[in-house]
Length: 185
Image (tube, rainbow, N blue to C red; front, side):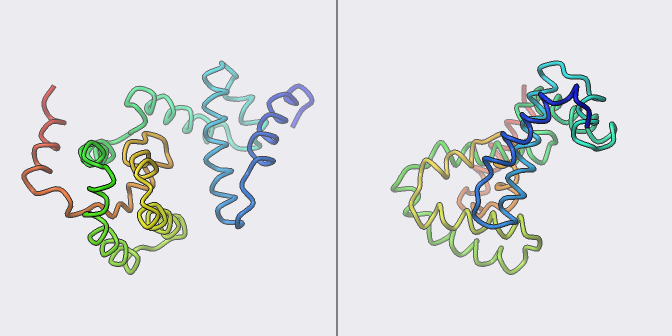
């Protein structure tokens, strides 16, 4: 890394590494990766050349280019990149509209059963950690936290919805109505 890149280098280091949560190594690494993606997006938006960012991060230019392309797609689509993510977001928005303390109380048995079922079939540390995060939110009755996950267009929200325990809360008719809204302008 060159002297000319010191400003960017120090921003990435300070803002990504020094402020990472110190809970456990896996969560810390996941947080650093998410935060670095966010910072990379900020630098791209600020007009920093991709080649320079690649040099600072000590990664191939193609990696930074791929992240830049993904960032631009996310900006155009509100964070969601593909049709599957759009469908999931639409369904979760319907749930978010109905979510309040009473609804959460009535949904909790199904959500907890879904979490137990998902835990037996999920592989990979990020998915297991996201199931644990879902469980904590539900058991704490954190309506605002759950709503934030249901509506988030950030990478973290998208990843949480990949292991959503909300299956079976909407009726089939409600699901189809929500999904049909995607097809209509």
